[in-house]
Length: 126
Image 1 (cartoon, rainbow, N blue to C red):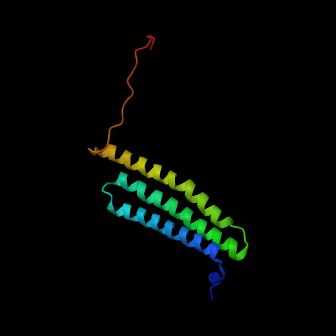
Image 2: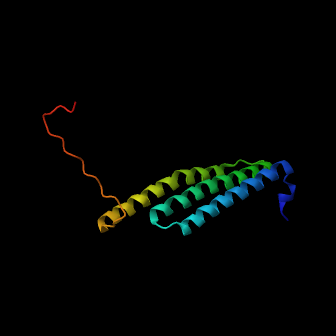
Image 3: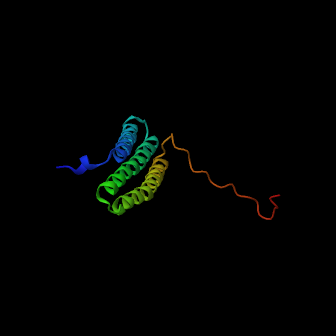
């Protein structure tokens, strides 16, 4: 038997709303991964969808189990912190490695790295 029937209405409504909104945001991010046309556009949709979706679903889990079992919500907090810290780092590393690869291969859609303009020595920049 499920103990979710013991969840009071004042807690069940926010849990359902958080779960629905979190799953819709995650679904939108997944659809963005399929629909967007190039790699650089595809980076943002799933990372934002995953971050926001996991945070909302974890909040629903925190609320549900805090009401039902009166327990600490330590696991969910760790999941949220881990996702919030690792998702942007993964996005940056994937983007930088793809940009490096595209520059080496000479892809036309990627801007070239600008070289700094040398300034003459001994002159005052003002």
